[in-house]
Image (cartoon, rainbow, N blue to C red; front, side):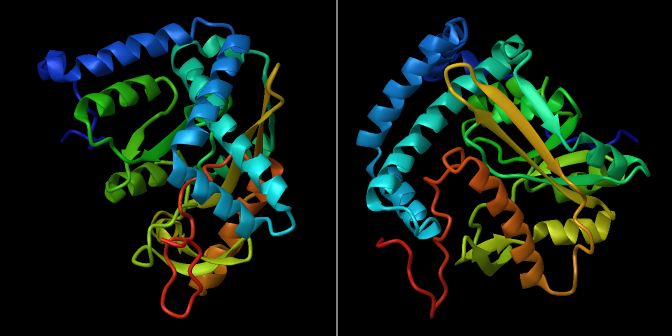
Length: 311
């Protein structure tokens, strides 16, 4: 019997039809951008960030509001400054991801890792590993630099456009061992039982069907608890990973792996969610603008909770 693997998007001849020509042209242009030196890529990132800041009003408002709530010690001027930097880091992350996909040699000599011994020790008995991480603006560049030291699987959400889904999947293949559809829980558990390392990011608001309300930067937030169930079923161990950029003109990249999370999970779902949120918060404070603050992290606010966003 053939072993189940995560659904792999296949090339379809229909991708050559005119309706996809725009994506082909965009792909060619993006691949050309990887030829450019970092100095020019950086200048383009700043230009795109400025354009996005002006044109993406809802994202701009959400970013500012999130930073106001999570960093109340910042003045309005500081909040706006940091919010603009979020857009810059996002655009820098696009170029970093393109480099990871099409010019990975660019990262040579730019990466350092701390805590690899903790990961290796946790793996020594063959246990699967859930690596708790965040949705960094580095995107797949973070996955690539991690892959230089260990071979992670990643949980992802397939793209709605089948051609785009195929393209992204193919670009990620050299980086990850397996790309696991977020709905394919059976395969995810199997990979953990096989002793694999799974990069998992429970840092977004998916409502209370998949989580509980727990503080995030001191603010009640819908917090994913699926990792608790995965640990109970697979007997996996939980560690956390954080990767971030240091500097811009000549960037370096730091990977930090924290020691195994002991006594997790407990019988208290909210306490466990709070503990994971504290890990994520610790990560974000290291490089506050290198996270996707333009998502509505606090959109779920049950009756009796203060609404964070106006609309």
